[in-house]
Image 1 (cartoon, rainbow, N blue to C red):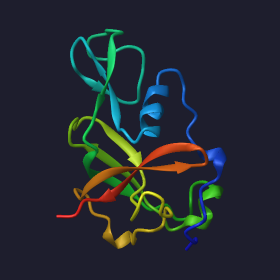
Image 2 (cartoon, one colour; image 1 turned 120 degrees about the vertical axis):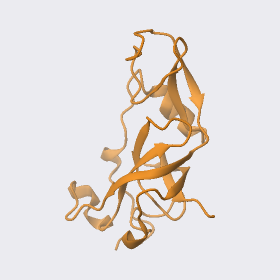
Image 3 (tube, helix red, strand yellow; image 1 turned 135 degrees about the horizontal axis):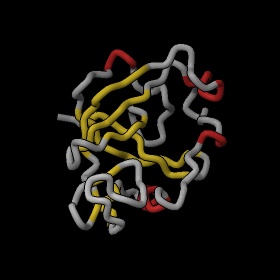
Length: 151
């Protein structure tokens, strides 16, 4: 396992585009927000200029509670990207948001916001487990990560 100071390669951080830039700006403030159509009120992710439901270009960024559940997960062996080899075994989870169940975000389950990617024992991952969004700086970009909710 990698030690707590090992971080993913800075080249693997997100590259925001015009549509997604607000998502990352809100994340830098510790807020999970999802683009939402102001015409039909449907949330959408990934962000894009036009609503796929009503074709409106009018949007807002709705704040989410950050609560969700693990919808799916994978533990890559060997790591899919060489820059992650030092972190194996690590998890990648798909989280269904409680506030917007049709929205699913990819991330990592960790023990604390700044913990290494391999900080959670893979045996603890369960479909349906409740999680909460937390935020961590990864090579200069704040990214959402997930921790298990405590009962």
